[in-house]
Image (cartoon, rainbow, N blue to C red; front, top):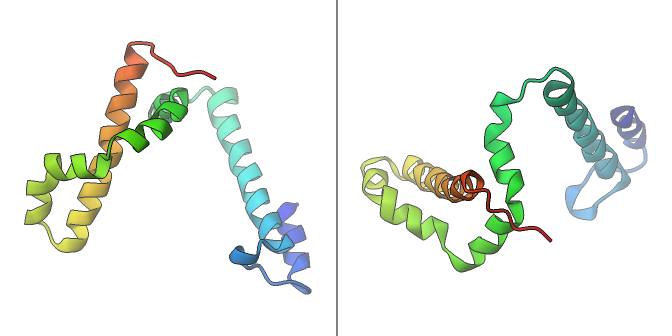
Length: 122
């Protein structure tokens, strides 16, 4: 329904992200609601929960990792841990490895907090 409204709105207003046009809002909102419905059906209705553990760990301490990024430079830490391997790869793949390493290090911190049942709540 939202995508249909977006298609109807294209006659008068282009979908431009930097202007936050009504068409852009209709398109992104409808895609978000559709994905939320799909994930609700998969996780809550069908009971397929094992694949979502990665995201569950992040969601339980999302505020904590947001605040920790101000204190710790995970990208620099990734360079110290994975820098030797990244230098062996071509430049583009080395950057991908360092970025993936930074995500992995963040997730490991969150996993440690999750295992010890340490949660920052507001």
